[in-house]
Length: 217
Ligand SMILES: C[S@@+](CC[C@H](N)C(=O)[O-])C[C@H]1O[C@@H](n2cnc3c(N)ncnc32)[C@H](O)[C@@H]1O
Image (cartoon, rainbow, N blue to C red; front, side, top):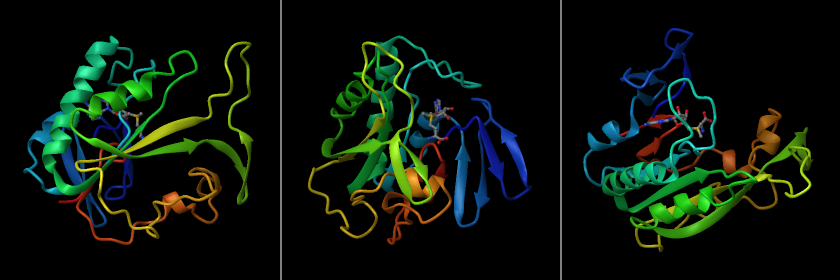
């Protein structure tokens, strides 16, 4: 729910956000809420959300404008544990949480540690690997970063953990959740046909995306 910058169609300008700068506005049919995710989650009623999609900071030292992305691992995981408890509270029993986390070559445990934190509140129903590759037109070719290490293999993926409360939530087989052989960022980045993962879901859900950040009650 916090962005460093966000473009608003309402006034056609880019807004720069700071942590204590909390507000909301409409973009089409969506309500965009900017603010600290814990504060905003705590204001939502129990079981009021069907789907949460989020990509929290990975704690890898990215130079965000308003967030320290290199905190002690325990502090970082404790913070995400609190976020997990709040997401579990606002999500209904048949809801889904899609949690995107990346790692680095030198710290490959990050995504798994974060998943372990959410395990306290959820069941891991699906473990999706987002393979990141270079795309040309509608085809994808090879890796998106050159191999420049004598000790590490290419790190060309991130994790998308699909958490649910029961582990038995039905997934709509043709809704865009089944990716097949395509890659998430291939065709869509090229501005051509959208990949399966990027297709608009066909169901009407109360949905929060905690980093894009769309929130519909
Ligand atoms: C890994 S990035 C996700 C970027 C996003 N997926 C995108 O494509 O723009 C993590 C984001 O979490 C935001 N963030 C950091 N602390 C936050 C907080 N307490 N509440 C909400 N968002 C926060 C950062 O500003 C950053 O934009």
